[in-house]
Amino acid sequence: MIMADGERFKLPASVFVMAREAGRVLLLRRNNTGWMDGHFSLPAGRIKGGETLVSAARRELEEETSLVAKESALFLAHVLHSRNEDGQEWTGYFFECSRFDGSPYLNEPNKHDRLGWYEADQYPSPLVPYVAQALSAIRCSQPFSAYGWAATG
Image (cartoon, rainbow, N blue to C red; front, side, top):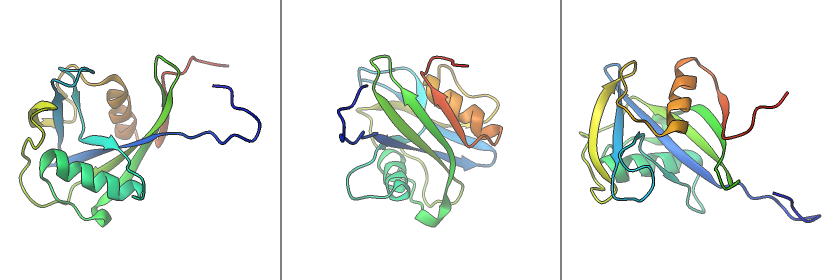
């Protein structure tokens, strides 16, 4: 995207939460959204104005799963710079959380039809592709990756 001189580029951001328990990761299956329905993903959402990344991650975890975590229990594990097929760029901030209260519950049945704990080496299929990439990067302790960009160099 070409910007006019002096125009500031704005990069939308989303947060993702990798809730962990006993070596397993909590995943949701998308349903009735019109985008990637049938694919599994982490609890996630866009950042609202006036909130920090970590407060957005805490909010999304609770909104989608009923799990309540303190902000101090969320740790940044990965940053993803993504470009969609239409050229729109955004960043994804993936947080890990293994301390939370409550039991997971499908809080948004209009957006998800399944919620469950899955072994890190046996994720269900299909996963949202950039989420699969981020989960793999986290497993390898890779703090950053890019998705949807043509290979260069």
